[in-house]
Image 1: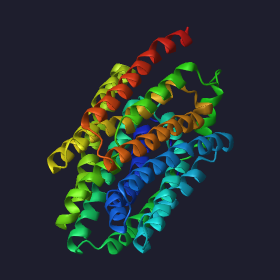
Image 2 (image 1 turned 135 degrees about the horizontal axis):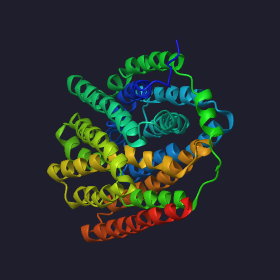
Image 3 (image 1 turned 90 degrees about the vertical axis):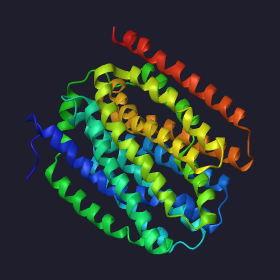
Image 4 (image 1 turned 120 degrees about the horizontal axis):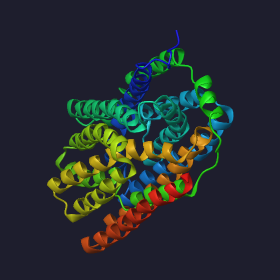
Length: 398
């Protein structure tokens, strides 16, 4: 039986169903990702390798969305892309059979490609479903559900690492159980929700099908913001450098859990703030992006790493909700899959650059003053670009 999306409650039900899919997926891949930096270090990878892999993974995970988003718009095969994308999450449990860091890297990159295949289609459907209730609320609620899984995943991984005496193999392999549940849930939701007719109806209402200048300026602002933000994988790498000699690697996923916990609460609240105040809300995460790299690079004390993790969680919560919600303001439905693809490709370029730069900063022990100078320049440039989007958008709507 398909869900009727024309009733007042149905958009919320649809958003919750998509949230459950993401929740199950996050238990697997966010749980695994919280352990990946420590696992790569255990297998012999350096900070530069870990930073580069993290950046390359994010770059592929976002850049390939340019292709998958375009194809999703062209074929309207949104569910096919979702099934392929979620299916590739199996790469995370398979890390349990990786014996060298090169093999582990390949699996990590496959999981990121899966993210690239599914996300534009999912976000396009969410943006259409939520048109009557506000994209900020929709993406905020979805991200909250998503982050429940992102909290449960690292908690499960940390527990298995603790009770198995830091056995990486069995910890990764146990994630096969939630992966199989994900497949069941995804299939069930597919049978309940029809998307083609809904999206085609929205396309017929549109006159404009091109990207405006404001979309590209906004995308540039987000890319600059991401370049200046240290990736979570390097925050965890720094934590691993402290905890691994003590035999307390099981704490590393808990730090990732902290990030996801902060992310969840912030995403929900910021979604409502976006619907009320608009794009100017994004100035706050741009400013807060200064703190994660500062505290991560400040010292090798676990306390500063925890502070960096909290600030990163705040920024991430806004990135995963209102950054995505704002795209719907700049792109018509007919090309929105491609818009999310372009937006996320730029986002991925930012992660690739930041992962490489901060990895070098860590390996070469660059001074905190130079790090701070780099962060301030990038975030000031990002805020300048962001402030330009609103006047440009007003001009375009005249």
